[in-house]
Image (cartoon, rainbow, N blue to C red; front, side, top):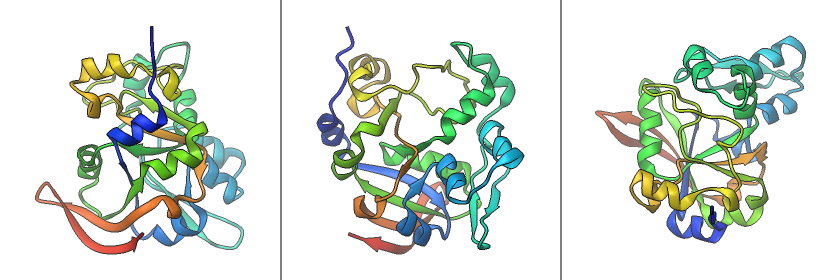
Length: 228
């Protein structure tokens, strides 16, 4: 029987969460919050074929979108994904376009600095905004929109692990003990924490924001942007 995990226990094990965003995006994040791709497209009133392509297909490169006032926002590429590998590992009748739409409705957080560093290593040619999030504050407001995943759901390399309708689960339905045993401890039992659609008040939950990059395999601080 799956016992799940409480929001309080998540915060106790992982008092800090991490998010990586586009370099230079802190003012927009501060003003509008962290937006999923779907929420960003809503904000910019992007519709029609452009929207269907962005939400339902793999992005081979970073895409820029422009709203009616001329404001520009970047949507990160999905380089770690392979359509062929994704199609081979999807379950429950899902197609790659279904999976991309699921991912694009979520805001993603890493639970360990090591996971953050691995992702940044895949984009080591550029600096990034790094947010250090107060887990308790985030969950106290957005806990009803949280799901957990036991894998990097936006990656199919080197292994395309099976994924489907039950990959993202509410904390009370998540097999924390099973994943703890399988993955080697409580800090490894959850790989991704997601919030559905957006976190408009992320600045209030952010302990520190900075520009960082990977240099010689290690995180290098470039500048502080915010401390709370």
